Image (cartoon, rainbow, N blue to C red; front, top):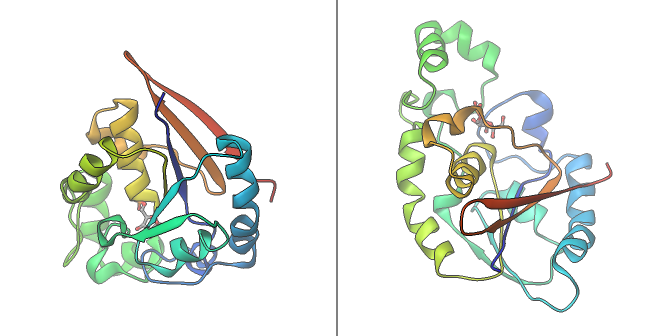
Length: 193
Ligand code: F6P
């Protein structure tokens, strides 16, 4: 059966600092994940099969895929949810500077749109072409960001998109999804970092 492999990028410098958005480099731990990824992929995919790797246009996903020898494609539509004026801030700073927005997001995280940015609902719409392309492709490995991965994951796991903002998608873990007639089978491969 057809499978899809998905992973978040390795830990970034911004992840360490608790800042959202941006275009930071990988942290030393994130770089370890990048180094381990070819082996983890080999474990999950087997030796012979060639994948195509889709990343976003942001450095942390490109750096995570760096040591994979497969063909690669960068998609702007896979960039992280645009946090607008809050880009580069910590959640604490957002709460301080935009208290009403902070509260509004907590109350309706799926529909809340950052000032000058996006909501999860917006992301689901911009992912439509990606999902369509995925549905007619084989052997794709996607390396992308937390919010984006939540929406793709929810789609394949048949979870209502309204719940995607709260889905758990850990760092440093390769997820293999195999859609079947009535459900999608999931396997996780965690890096040893
Ligand atoms: O913190 C990493 C990150 O990918 C941010 O860049 C992004 O804004 C956030 O996660 C998305 O998660 P949430 O919607 O839970 O804030």
